[in-house]
Amino acid sequence: MKILVIQLSLTVALAGLDVAIAQDSTKTLNPVQVMELVRKFHPVAKQAVLHIEKSQADLLVARGGFDPVVGAYVSSKRFEGTNYYRSTSPEILIPTWYGIEVHSGVDNYTGERLDPTMTKGQSAFLGVSVPLARDLIMDKRRASLKQARIFRSLADTEQRQVINDLLMDAMDAYWQWVNYHNQFLIVQANVVINAQRLDFVRKSLLNGERAAIDTIETLAQLQSFQYQQNQYKLEFRNAGLRLSAFLWNDAAEPYILPETVLPPADWDNQQNMTDFELDLASLLIAAAQTHPELRTYDFKLRALDIEKRLKFQQLLPKADFRYNHLSKGYNALASAGEHAIFDNNYQYGFKFEIPLRLSAGRGEYKMAQLKIQETRLDQTQKQLDLEVKVRQYHNEFNTLREQISLQSLNYANYQQLVKAEELRFSNGESSLFLINSRENKALEARQKLVELKTKYFKTAYALQWSAGLLD
Image (cartoon, rainbow, N blue to C red):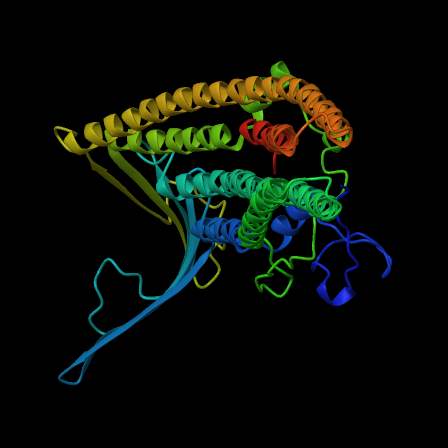
């Protein structure tokens, strides 16, 4: 019996389906539409997008470490009528990539008891601060920015992984829904046939052509099919609810799939898989090179390498040099070129420190190395797991294709047996018991065929999922 199709009005159309369908056309739900709805409206998919936006915000925070900083220090002291000092010192600090900081500012010191090291009146300075050992090659500011860039790319990959898993869960629910719908239709067709047969037997009984026991035999068979019909109707409804868990509309509201929405009549058309990658070698290459789960390890290793380089800085001594060129007045370059940098109008400082045992530095550097080794081992294991998974699904896919061919022949044979038995029955050479027995076997064969086909298509999607291609 052909799959039932229905008319759906625009008010119950699935939100977000970008398929132009006339109002009087048939409406069904195919796997491509389900995946499109999941990608667009499912909350988990939207959360993955929010995760990307959060990583973008983290990147902005890390870039803030290189923002110029403007500050000022104002102080004064007056005691027992004496104006000791008053100072005003605005300054701008400009960080650069290689740990060097450029700073410039002005000082204005007045008062009766100034510190002798202070220059009275107005002066300006322009200088640099340079790390000579630790923090020269890598510091926390640069490490944070580099890692934030990596985590921004990692967020894209994690989004692919979330969508890949989410779509596979949706396809699992979809093909269960398709299976139960077709199982219901198969049994429903048998109910119709057996109801007609019961009517025929009752008329034959009234005409004295059949025994009363034949009526009971036919009725028992009909009731058995009616029981199965009710059971599959329940399964179909529940499968629709499970599928509805993946269907949301553009208003972020859950969408309950109506029972009137059905799978398409050509759900088992092989042309539906023309865009799928089914070659084992290509699938293995795709899994090894582009699978989001493996790609996340690449980004994690890059971030850990930056952390290791940062921890290595803890093994170096702290040696910072600071130099200021000084000028009278508020023009920091007023005396530029008049003297050599260490001849006149300058100020410098040098700071050096190093832990004698470097215990903390050695421990943190070792920990960073161990994290990298641990992540690489996890990556190797994950790559093997994915390869095994791809091979398993590929084996299952090929076996199911062979099983479908065999089961199709098996079903065709049982159909012939049922027809032959019905012909013998109409000639008075058989019994209802034999017809029912043949019919039950044919029903089981057809149900098994539908089950194999839906599992076959679900496995095709699982094969794409295992290679990371279902995003």
